[in-house]
Image (cartoon, rainbow, N blue to C red; front, side):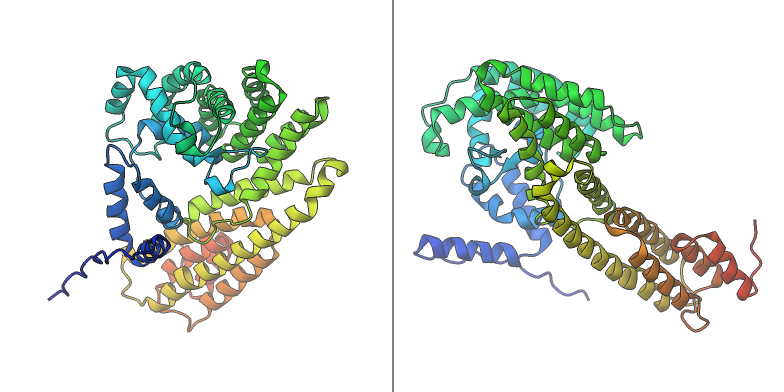
Length: 436
């Protein structure tokens, strides 16, 4: 008889003090089970007007970053998809920095919807059943919306409740709508470039420079400060979205050295620093291995590219970049060691001669993912640590008493870890004839 399901935690009486109420809510969010949290997120996403519920999602965000639940693709998410890497919590946003404060999103989206009218409603209907992680669908449905939004947004005036809702002034509204308009105007171009690189095509630096130039030209009549904001923001997005970060960094360097005005040079350096800021708290441990490998590849390319800049540009950033490299390399090594021990070695040693095909296939599949992760990690600080760990694991697995797993099954894992020669040696020592 299976145990009765654990009841969902019941809401407690609200403390009289609002700070205590928030503390209690945060405590409940950190202790509920994953499936309960997912149900709360789904319920909030289904609300026609989330309002204060967004405060709840802010508290959930650290857990949501780990769980990565499927989220419905909404009009607002589609509109801001090109800007996603640049959306910041309000306490992290500064007027003299880069990024879009999250507090303005609902107001500006509402303004755009009001102008678009029935077209916005039609967009809602077209997005039903699509999730926010479906890149091709985002590009398909977003291209038209982004073009239309880029024409409407720069002409919007701040609504009457703008300051009350966001804490910002009319000048901030003008800056934000022009900035967002300039970036989403290039959403289709950046999306197409990203799709091409994901299919193995080399990064087209000429198109990268064209995207940067076009986005800046679109706001050229509104002052150098806004132009610097747009160019810095677009550089950050390209760095976050595209492989070959080294090439984008070099484009940023070219931009900094080839423009005489200080604002444009500052924008390029701001973009580099913005990305460095984002690396201060890398999420290596909670991502699935394939996603973690992709993230490490981008980070390694970025950090390696900083070493290619001329010494004057690099001097103020070199020590910080090297500190980040050591920090992320340590996280990568720790995860590799842990996954190798708990998800490869331990299961193999626990299996016997009666191991099922599904059990063996699961170990092989995970070992392949681990090798892909390890290959990406080598770009950060070399191969010596990983070579040592793999050699020690192989020596232990191939000892006579390590496991009762059938030799052909063990040989397949060894081949994934080290290569075919080690697998053939194992088969030869155990007297197993390989069938070619």
